Amino acid sequence: MNDTVNSALSALSEGRRHLFDLAERLRASPELGFFEVKTAAMLAAELEGMGARVERGLALTGLRAEVGPPGAPAIALLADMDALPTQGAPGGTAHSCGHHAQMAILAAVFKALVAVYLPGREKIRLLFIASPAEEYVDLGRRMELRESGTIRYLSGKQEMIRLGVFDDVSVVLKYHSMADSPVRKATVNGTLNGFMAKRAEFIGKAAHAGAHPEDGVNALNAASLALQAIHAQRETFVDSDHVRVHPILSEGGTVVNSVPARAVLETYIRAATHEAIMDAAIKVDRALCAGALAVGASLRIRSTPGYQAFHPSPAMGNLLGEAAKTLLPASAIDFEDASYASDDIGDVACLLPTCQLGYSGFCGTIHNADFAPTDSERAYFEPAAILLRLTCTLAENGGAKAASIRKEFQPHFSKTDYLASLDAQFSERFFDGSTAGFKTL
Image 1 (cartoon, rainbow, N blue to C red):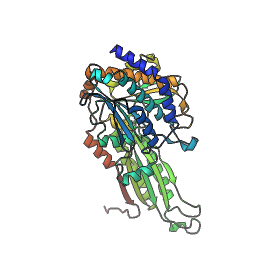
Image 2: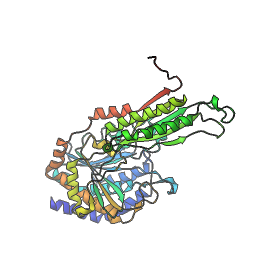
Image 3: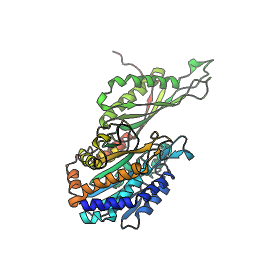
Image 4: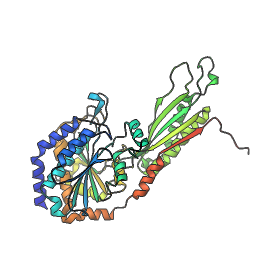
């Protein structure tokens, strides 16, 4: 296997200029989720013609390339495709989360391993999967796609799970860019919170705010009280659940001299487990109803599923850590990273053993226009080399390690239960705060 690893690293090194060029071409063509048409075409051009079985149009724009004997253990290299709205970026959209790097790096690893015939030699299947729509943005268009029946779920990986793209996968490898730091150069298997989203519309009654405010029902006051009630819940959240509720008031009236007849709150409810998310969601709903009840307003709550918390495979993390230590000292690797952000890689990881490498080489702040590569070697080549080594380790002896990890893995859900959970989180409920009464004791 050492000869195969060295040959693959040589192939990766020989293609490094092409890797850098592909990364920059993808970066220069940012597209929002489920609309990554040019991105998909660029990736297909990279992968077709090298003997891979390529499926396109998965979850609208995603693709899957496969090499190796049918039925063999499958190692999947998974990359996000979409960009996101970014203030200050040309055209208002940018790869400010580094997804261009994911695609370029994992495509380069796939090509290098195919070039040295790894799938055929080891009798494994090697997959490159490009998934659309990781960023939870542009929800207006996504809801239109859902309402038309074009998609069922709001993220690319959720759709791909539904469509069976991961049904025959043994293990999943992923990578994410990160900004340079004086304390670490890489992270191995950092965890992420999951979340669900809520939109609360408070419906009151307009009246002249100066002449006859008593004739109105102030929807803004209802929303303000709901915010305070949400804040009052915070001491009930268990610290180890890492609960984050961060609402915004997106609408609160139209003119100053009219009692606001409508106000809108939007929030995510994040936590470290599915159970903690659902528990916090109940408390948030109570708080929203309390605000409406206090002033006699009505309330419409629309809930939509976000992502599962990311709990990576410890077994895969151990192997990823060993691969990372061939390039970095252990002191430069953060093995304990716990982020309270979210990513739909959590949805894959609740069904399949998954690992993720975070790697530096970027400057600026993620999700901002200044997030950009500073060093192509560190931003692109070094993480590719680590993931290539890990893939070789998982592939050796007919994919014995990949198959063993898959066999020992305990999924959080069955696929059927997972999809049912997503469906259950789509809801719209109405509460009439003007008709509340009391029981006579």
